[in-house]
Image 1 (cartoon, one colour):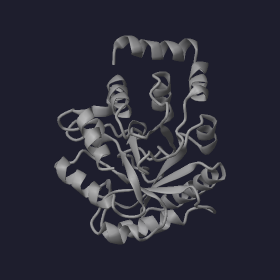
Image 2: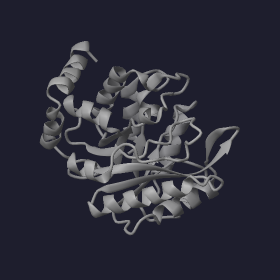
Image 3: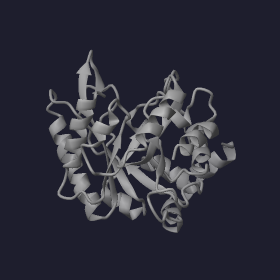
Length: 291
């Protein structure tokens, strides 16, 4: 990104912060959460707000905001990309850059479970709430739901996610829930990606709140996906996770899972924004081709 564009963003934030709301009000909104092919292709970039800056072998990959914005603008410009998921700071920068026209925008909601913190399972809602998402004219909100049966901080997170699901459904906005069964192993939280654990996580997430008409799921690709995805009738998007050691195998796994009836697309971040060869265009186009 040219330094002049970065200066423009900072100058607007200093001298005319109201321009952000004006840009949101004037934005061309997406007609549907899915593209013409009936599939969604969402670029995710909400990791920094949880202190998760690593991508592959680069521990501080997402720490350079101008570089991240440049990669996001490149990804969002590619055919087949339907939307983006991020926190307010990033989405507002993208609004000022004019990169969100025609896209479905998801605000990330609970970023309080900081990566590596002793309180990581207490995943509080410290970013968007449903009212702020609606005020900006965005399409929905995303929440992370990690369930640790041995950590009593899971219970308040469940309650907070249920409340957010209710608020988003009441506002007719998509509630995107990303569920895992998780455990703390050697001091670090690890998600259980076994088929049984993911089946249980999907069942729990599907039952959150007093309405599910606007609830979607965000799930990883695991073994026995046909059995796992049979746990719910809610629309689901596949997440990308960390940069894979074997990108071709990851693309093949996504392609197989996309054939399942409830799977409606992809939500991918680091795998496409920070591929090993740094060719964002090729990575995004390959993923979009699966749709």
